[in-house]
Image (cartoon, rainbow, N blue to C red; front, side, top):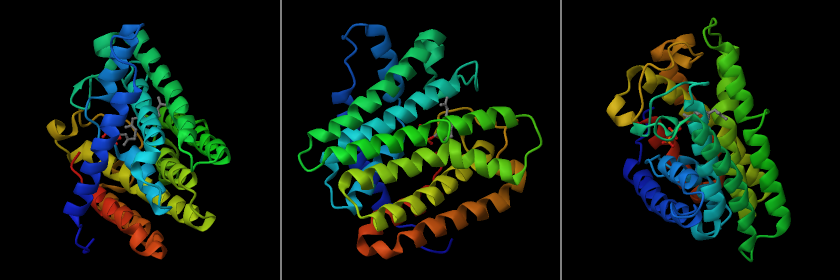
Length: 301
Ligand code: GRG
């Protein structure tokens, strides 16, 4: 893509809002001294392992389109990160990907054992919904929006979304990679949570239906580009930067397996272009979304 990637602007947006998310996560997660301590230690261990915080930042950016201040949407933003971390903990388990490293440190089950990792994931999942509902404490957010946002999250992460994608991914592993499968797996496994984050931000912020539709199209394209880049980094990325083993997708249905590396890069580029085009009607309100899409295309971790 020839467009200049306005990297500093996107980096500043990520850093500033990432800090807010970090502080809010610390406030909302039970302390390691709260009984039963072991599960709270496991939850905090995985949450504070240094993720990019993309999903909470997308919730914030979605709400920003509707003019809602980042601080007012933080519980919902944290909910998105907790769901994401739960999915990583469970995905890394021996019964799934059996991954030893994540976010630059040994995975949750390696440190705390399998049973505790399952429970830490379950507890993060439960806490996410508690936090999402707490957005109702903000006086400008009527209960109907909360109910709708809860529906968005449940659909985004259930069998019609993230879990469904994970199931298809597991079934397809080891088989012949084909275009229809890889698109469907990525749409569900990664795309549906990213799409839900943007919609939840828009819904809680009180965006118009037209703007929620724009956020949806953006989220679908961004999610696709993000997962293609993730697939590419698994082949060509640096383990130290990624904080996890590379080459772990070798038996998986991925974009490089179906299209090769060069075509995969073009497809990530195209999806990014479409994400950017979809937010054009927002004018200046879409600037952060545009910058983020360009930045994520260039990412190395
Ligand atoms: C419900 C068990 C279960 C799994 C759902 C999301 C998922 C499927 C599994 C997680 C593993 C994985 C590689 C998913 C693809 C999505 C993805 C690119 C995850 C990594 O997200 P980043 O790069 O991670 O945002 P950080 O660590 O920066 O937050």
